[in-house]
Amino acid sequence: MEKDIIFQIANRIKERRKEKKITLEKLADEAGVTKGLISQIENNRTVPSLTVLLSIIKALQTDLDDFFGQLSLADNDGAVLIKANQHEPIEKEHNEGSYYNRIMSFKQDGKLVDVVLYRQEKNAPRDFVSTDAFEFDYMLKGVAQYTIGDKKYVLEPGDTFYYDARQPHLSECLSDDEYVMLVIYFFDNG
Image 1: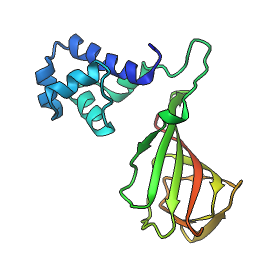
Image 2: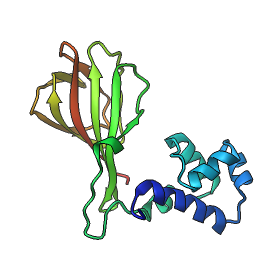
Image 3: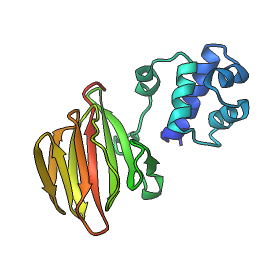
Image 4: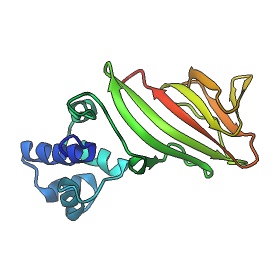
């Protein structure tokens, strides 16, 4: 249970709050949430959204690298198992018809790696986006087209695609319903 990442985050918040001698009420006020929510998070009864978690970390005046750097995803043997029902939906862009489901995130050699299952529906409205990472895509289902600059790349099931996602890029679904791909982000800044 101690290696469970949510449990570790809850404990880390409680430890930091107590180290800094901050009351539940003061932390809640600084983070813009209720005292009851902070208590539920610290006692592992609820999982904070990313926005709430970042607000709490900011209110604790704690560096993100310091907060997350001490968390461990691995068991004693170095293995990590995350069950399918533990994957979490995330919102990267506010586009209807585009869905991200985080499989796992971890640090390798001090750099953040984010593994996501991405699904895009046919005719989903998209804009050019950029991410502060290099991106590896493995197409699982359907057909997608990426536009980077004046070049277009068509991905079909089994295709792999690696590029500098810091460049503005656009993905479009060419399938009749949707496409699904495994996406691995390699963040340079950790």
